[in-house]
Length: 164
Image (cartoon, rainbow, N blue to C red; front, side, top):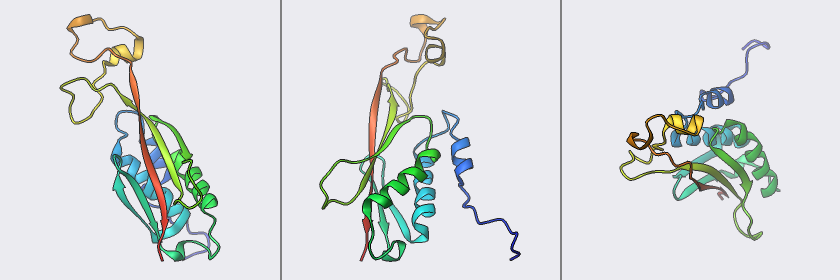
């Protein structure tokens, strides 16, 4: 390699994930990709992600991924700072979970989960675009989409577990 060669950038780089988040196309798979990319940037290729959004994710770290005197809070903050810019516009917060010192460090990702009226498809938000954009809908009661702007907050945990 030449000294001026461009550094390696993973396929789902920060720019690609963040710019691809333009709203409707940002979903669970993009969040998983963002977590994997952030873990790679912070811990290298010895980090393995397991789990799902409902039960939470566990980031298993090989001992080689950190120094002998590993500071859990430092690792958690590095992951938080790297992951935050990669997440989509529906993410409200990404904070360290409150807990006792003997627990594995966790991040809690809080995101908006829109109103899901009966008959919604696969958990997708079925809100009226006009109502969401303008606060009114010209179709009124005839509109097949929800006119509720009620949102719930979904939480997903990301736990860091060092392996022996």
